[in-house]
Amino acid sequence: MLIRKLFKFENAHIVRGCTTRRCSENIHGHSYKVEVLLESNYLDAGQMVYDFGLTKLYMKELIDSFDHSITLWSKDDPAYIEAMKAHSNRWVELPVSPSAEQFVRVIYLMVERVLECTQMQNEEREVKLHSIIVHETDTGYAQGFREDAHSELMGKIDLEDIVFSEQIRREWSESELWGKLLARTPIRNPKKV
Ligand SMILES: Nc1nc2c(c(=O)[nH]1)N=C([C@H](O)[C@H](O)COP(=O)(O)OP(=O)(O)OP(=O)(O)O)CN2
View 1 (tube, helix red, strand yellow):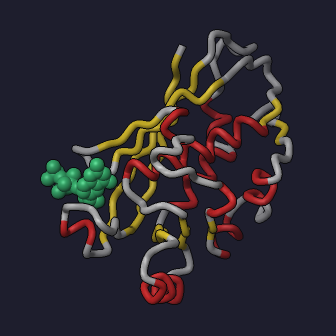
View 2: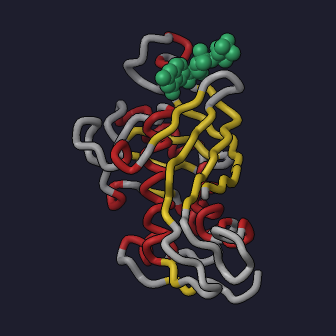
């Protein structure tokens, strides 16, 4: 059984090197829609694969890091990166360029890490991340699976190389959230949300 939960964020970027000039040469924004698809062969005590309410904790919080922020590629021109950081308090620096495809891979790895650290409390069993879909516009989206997120062919993404600005970290429910996930600290789901 598959379930999907939709999240949204507004984000700005440049995607260097792509064929579309408007995209590679101009800062522009998108109203992103992100679908998180979870699967299991089992149901929990509430006869659900995974309560949608639980996805609105750390999964939503991490995805919301991109909301009203600018996403920077760490290999972009240092002068551009420095200028963006000087004039925007909400930024995320990625080791990959922020195409829809790379957003899928990054968000997949984030949500996968949240699930890996989560201690279930309501008899959820073998809840797995099936895929992530990122809609960049109304007409274009990318969907990625485990093999894409971990693909060496597409370039390995190390979660340690993702940097969130101070303002984003301060707005999380706990500012050490990312550090805890990197350290694989167990997260106990609440019994009720
Ligand atoms: N495979 C990808 N192609 C493109 C990406 C991408 O991330 N992956 N990104 C862009 C640009 O960011 C661009 O803003 C979106 O491109 P496009 O779909 O052409 O946007 P439009 O709104 O102009 O599309 P319409 O079909 O006219 O609505 C480019 N390509």
